[in-house]
Image 1 (cartoon, rainbow, N blue to C red):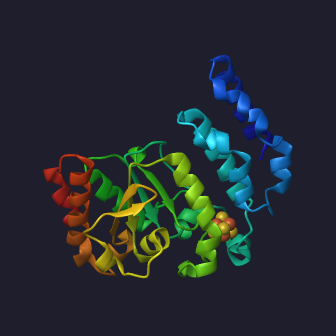
Image 2: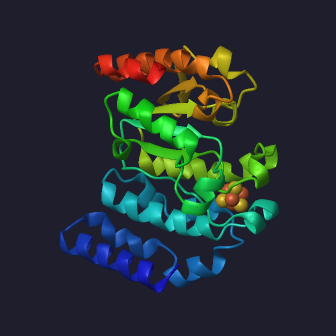
Length: 260
Ligand code: SF4
């Protein structure tokens, strides 16, 4: 962890303490920050979760935000997947607010994401942005992350052991972010999150469950690009309408633009 981040974290903790937030005192149960730093590259994530159960269990967003930053910092040093750790430019943790209505979950960072450190910023990301706008929402309102936090070389599919390695991070991240709904994008995201081998074509159209959170599966935006299967855009829009209805949101007429 950088000195700057450590300073910011403790300033926020002090702010919480002076505001009278009672569980701030439990921060003292955490291992000292330098100890976390020393363990960062080799300590299994499980140790993180075990170290902060009281913080993870609280409802208030600020401690969760802090813990999410600690998790992102640990992820940035992760080398569980040697090939990915040695070829990535940086990790791509995820972006968006806490307690969002919706979390989009993709497969893994691509070249653009690896370069910018943000999920879904390339051509597929621009299409996802259009879908979000068509749904009557803003990108800043949704949380976006991936099964993997590192780019597989040449954008190959994640290997099973890589998805398994990164799963603890994903679970911890979603525990902290607490989306109300999850929409998986593509087969890798759906199958990994739900622990199934069923294809997206069969998974879509019905809500699934992840730890009590309703999950809707749809196609990955990359598969909708002109070079792939743009005809599937109408299927994705049908999925989004289903999602909006379940979320209790109106279905914007302008959403039909996403089909074009
Ligand atoms: S993909 Fe996940 S588990 Fe693998 S090295 Fe990157 S952060 Fe670590």
